[in-house]
Amino acid sequence: MAFLEARGIRKSYTVGGSLLTVLRDLDLVVDAGEMVAIMGASGVGKSTLLHVLGGLDRADEGTVIIGDAELTALPDREVVALRNKQVGFVFQFHHLLPEFSALENAEMPTRIARMPLREARERAKELLGRVGLGERLAHRPGMLSGGEQQRVAVARALVMRPSVLLADEPTGDLDEQAAESLHGLLREMHQSYHLTSIIATHNPRLAAACDRVLRLHAGHLVPA
Image 1 (cartoon, rainbow, N blue to C red):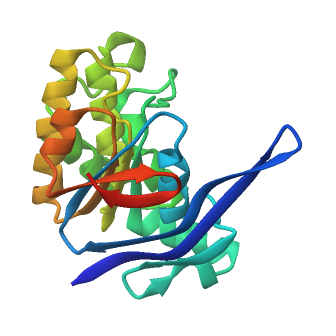
Image 2: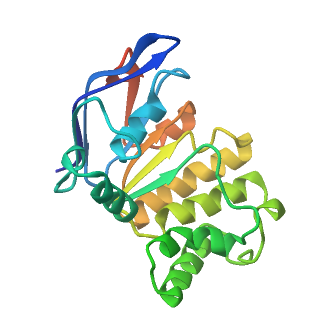
């Protein structure tokens, strides 16, 4: 059963006075509980697509539906509310706040949502334990390896218990060993938290861990 749908998505940017279209009448249907990889060359529009699907950016044309909500028909404030509750993001660069501990970084979305501190802390501790950092709650990002920092970012993405996980080149800044470890973690989190996941990646091993692989080419998605 479809949980995330994109229909007729078109997105363009003006570059050097010229119009560059990166997504052209793009369609995508992802079933609830499915884990989909999107591959493609650098600059082809994978990040743009994830931003449109997750409500970080608006398409010029087309419709995005998450669950029962038509994202593209909502005003900005309702898009923000739905995104914060329903969508978790993991980026290539973890964007952790260096002055805060792993626990405080993982809690950050709950602070924005004004969740009671006790509940927020319990959720963050649980997730950090699940990603293998239960003994490093007080460590700041500078005291963690690159792979550990990205695990904190995964915990942060899931602390609001979203339905959808969008990951943009999540292993792109990691060495091979850390990347391989993160592949398994993403799959485990996907299954344990009953997520619908879309992962943009260059990494064929990460793509192979997904249920379906698509390629973004010339603004369209095609089977890989």
